[in-house]
Length: 369
Ligand SMILES: Nc1ncnc2c1ncn2[C@@H]1O[C@H](COP(=O)(O)OP(=O)(O)OP(=O)(O)O)[C@@H](O)[C@H]1O
Image 1 (cartoon, rainbow, N blue to C red):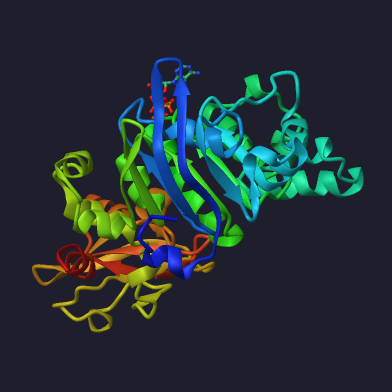
Image 2: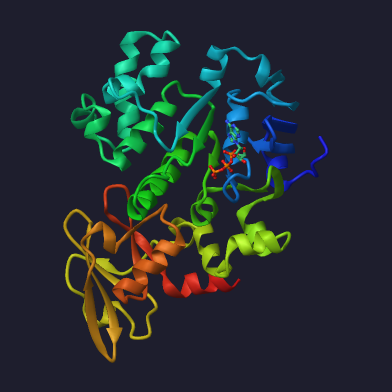
């Protein structure tokens, strides 16, 4: 390979790589001598302006497009030489338009690849249930629905569950969260991070959205006109964009974007003043950069307290939009802090119980460091 070794590439094994691949569609050279190494068990995000060759790269990896030259290898084998069953076992594919079979129920859609691979029927129903739970769709509610009965976000979730159907080590995702509103998109990103922490797949993810890319990528590949312009960790790219094109592509708010690189658990403080009762003066010093969190009997936050001009003032924090998860980005933490006007955001666990807090002061230090 002629690519310089890269830290993220040397700390993970490389199983999948493209070596000098080109693709010609008639007069159009969609890919020009692209070399890429995909870090195993990490998320690689391909991004670049429309028509730069992102989807073509993904389709080459899935052997849906014929290479004009070059080779893609998976382990020791050329993708081109793998048969359909081998490919299906190795790679799950989720796309923007979801591509669910309209005449099949949710269960049948998720079960599609395991069934085609001839897996035992007995274990498959259980697997569908587990996958639907994983993408946060209640199997009892959704199993027998048909695609036309789903919202855009629900359909995308089913698409992801289907791509995970046969438990492939590699997941190819082409704008999988493209066709939904920004709030649902953010929710799907959160869930994706949550799932990836558990499953640790080798993911190749195509997106148009630079914020999504920075948030999800371990390894970010910026493409332009059929070529790779820069491939590195998002932190390195934000710190040193290679040229003016990359700089323009990242946009002017690079320090704010850096906050998307970290999640709440990165700087969450767990021992924070909290209790079932409203606070007394003594539990929270007047110059505190922390909050006192009042919780209910289950440990769910109800109110956050802070000092304002010598008075303890409270804000209601009893809904998901008032709190953040351990895997929420610091950018989301910042938004929550600003919208509530508290010095910190309450971090909750999967059951919605108080886990700790992320302080404005800490975020500020990270954003300028
Ligand atoms: N089937 C095809 N036949 C002819 N040209 C194609 C075909 N598919 C893609 N192209 C061309 O190849 C180039 C790369 O397309 P590709 O879809 O890979 O880009 P992209 O970066 O994924 O774009 P977008 O972000 O708009 O989805 C474009 O110029 C496109 O017009």
